[in-house]
Image (cartoon, rainbow, N blue to C red; front, top):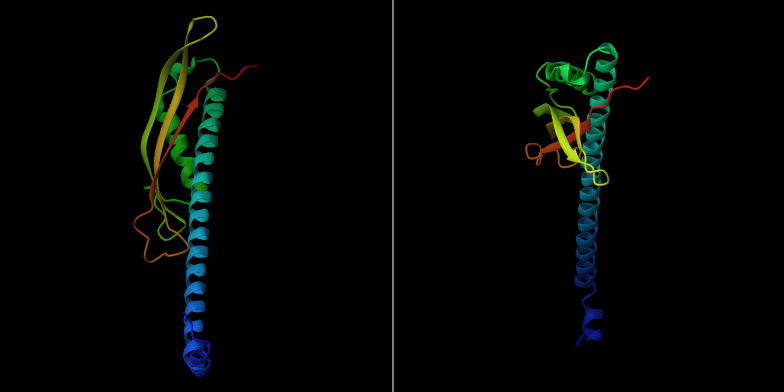
Length: 171
């Protein structure tokens, strides 16, 4: 039970306790706000990289198919796609030849897998087997966060996977 007379006689201690509790809530709110900004920032960077991967692969398909119009899709080599993919990653994120950039937002990108292969699926309606050439890309992205930069600089390495179906350009 709280004794009101005793609280009135200890106003200084009560005020100090109130200040400590308010400061604790303020620090907790500030920490939660910083964590929310941090997670939003990392998610937006990774989403942007994933969308860029898809667009780079689609533009590689369009560019290489246009250049090799008379040839079959299977005759286009994996190295042609890979070189285009690496060149555009370097350009988009201002990376050097080793796909590193130092102290920027995206510190490093590693191309873990980049394969060009044919997948086979069965059409549920007709039952026929369909072969589709596909580009399978998987990269590792090292992100430097803007919040908690010094404490968390070495633990943010994410793997991003993207499969893109290769289609012949129809005229």
